[in-house]
Image: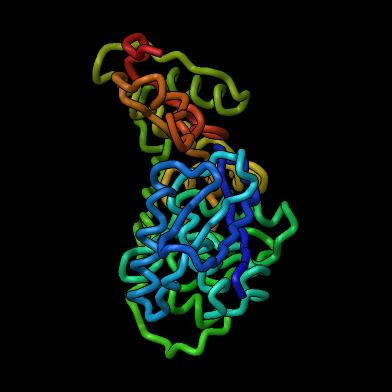
Length: 314
């Protein structure tokens, strides 16, 4: 078969759009051409895919490969398209089942040895795929627990391109590889400070309780060492657990920030305390390529503590 297609997800902030990845093999001079408005990181996918396929025991064809990312007018960012590109190329060369590849959404970055690296933004990407009507997604093994948090989604976690090809019908023999863990995996969540630890400061404690109960802003004034930062760190502990919608949003924000989500959605309100030298982009988010959430966005449904706020330049 000279043509095959599969799907991936392009993220614009927390919003995801489905991208059709097409691979065509022709008899022209050998080479790989990637079209469809990729950014610099995505443009380099051709070299990653070629090396990963060779080192996985399923090298790409020596003929001309044309890879199209559709819709062509939609900007595509990052390296999360590697797995979809590799499998579309292998399906076009009949190394794997084109029907099987076409029925699955593929998200993941390839290492040169063929292993799959966890990708930031996995949770919002899988949510987007689910909302757009897909029920099966293949992701790096390090992201499998995070992707499985989306209800009703069948998640296939693979450690390498070789494993992915075998799942799609290749007759290669399985080879055990070390799974690349997601950022923050295995780390212990910090214990939330308790307001009961505060001795004295009755007026400040009462102000915190009123602010938490009513959802009010709070302005703290006092000399260094008065306990402003200590009190602010205990404000999230007064807030109730996040509802399911807020929990999904906070967890998606963590995933997009590259912090990792873990095996369960976040249930406690976040606390963000940016340094007073933080730039406007660090505060509100943005970026010239892929949009990254700033401290204000990451503090959604939680607490944003602006220490030395008068020095912050926005």
